[in-house]
Length: 110
Image 1 (spheres, helix red, strand yellow):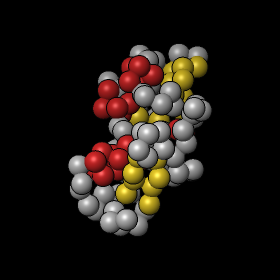
Image 2 (image 1 turned 180 degrees about the horizontal axis):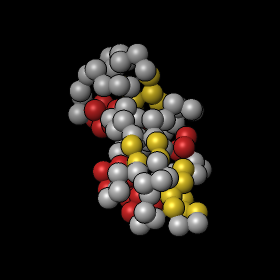
Image 3 (image 1 turned 90 degrees about the vertical axis):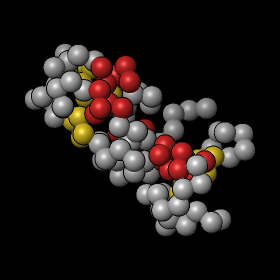
């Protein structure tokens, strides 16, 4: 299965390269390989693959990354599994655990 892309061009991930110290922690914790290292600093290599989990921002010692964690598909999938209503998006994983279909209308009843 290829690289997943979530909702195109809506990711809240931001990187302040002036703050980046090049420690590489963001590359280690990102489950989607969204970031890469170029000339000693991080850069966003695949923005649309970001699932907005927030791991990069929480683990960046320089505070160079920010993301509105919790609005992405990953949190919506977890909320759906926990049967929580009113998440930012309602997502469901298919029975094989391979597909994610998301709805932004917060209607998790169907």
